[in-house]
Image 1 (spheres, helix red, strand yellow):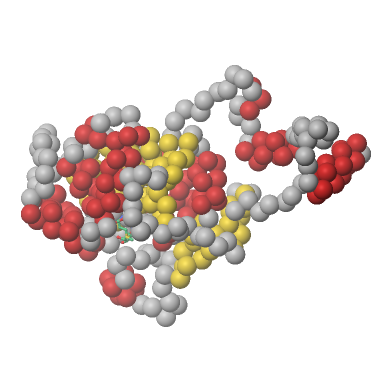
Image 2: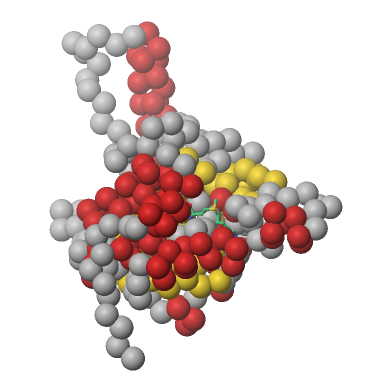
Amino acid sequence: MKTETQPFTSFNPDGLKLFEDKGISNSEKVRRIMQLTQDLSSKKIANLSVLDLGCGEGVYTLEAGLKGAKATGLDGRENRLKYGREVALSHGLHNVNFVVDDVRNVTFEKYGTFDVVYLLGLLYHLDEPEVFDILKNIYSVCGELLIIDTTIGLSTPLTVKYEGQEYFGVKYTEHMESDNDELMINKRIMASIGNKESFLPSKKSLIRFLDTLGFSSVLECYTPFEHNKPESRITLVAIKGKKENIASYPWINGIREDDLAKRIDGARVIVPHVLGHKHSFKAKIKLRLDKWLDKRGFKLVKKLKDQ
Ligand SMILES: C[S@@+](CC[C@H](N)C(=O)[O-])C[C@H]1O[C@@H](n2cnc3c(N)ncnc32)[C@H](O)[C@@H]1O
């Protein structure tokens, strides 16, 4: 049966109440996500397919749906998304669909692809190593853009290995060992499902993994503003574009990031001639030492932990 999308431009009071109930600061979040979607996708929102993972009540699903997108909200808890489903129904939004499922089951084979995928407030509820597999699957269902809003690890006491690469972050306790299912699933409704601890990667590690997956650009959003957003919370947009080939430095095309870093770190640094320049005593000693080492085929390298 063919279903027509209603050209709604505003929510009725039922719909507005769902958004009001989320609190006033949620207004900035919805504004930010919608602006990024419109600014960075190749089509108008009305022509996009959107998958909102861990959608909760579905504020982003509903907003995108009201603008005409084919929007799917997915959450592991029925009691989280039933409110959104009622609002979609009361607005006749046949283009909006809510699904109860675990994000672990989101695969290309099961769901196909969506132009835009939202991962808002969910990534930090997942644990390693499965979070890496989940992100891999999300990459496969993402057509153009993946928008992530997440808490990151500001401290990085933990190093984890995935497919030969090291990633840094910190663990967060979601549930206690003694907690029962009723508490974990039905009471603590904003928390993780199926894991008692979660892994918060550092910003660098998360971006590095998104790069490894194949996204062509990863951007961080500063505006639209979110007042009071803590330093530990970021919005990233990963773009699945075509990788651009560079004519001016042909060797850079297709090189692995760690090989490129090594190549750049190992490059000879051309320093200005000492004579005629004012250098501090420390800088002069460093220049002499570098020259001395260089002649003998050595180089001083500061080993930094790439967090
Ligand atoms: C902090 S809320 C974020 C809700 C919404 N995205 C927002 O930003 O308003 C996290 C949501 O993720 C859902 N969730 C947690 N773990 C999940 C999992 N493994 N699969 C699917 N949903 C999950 C929770 O039920 C909850 O609704």
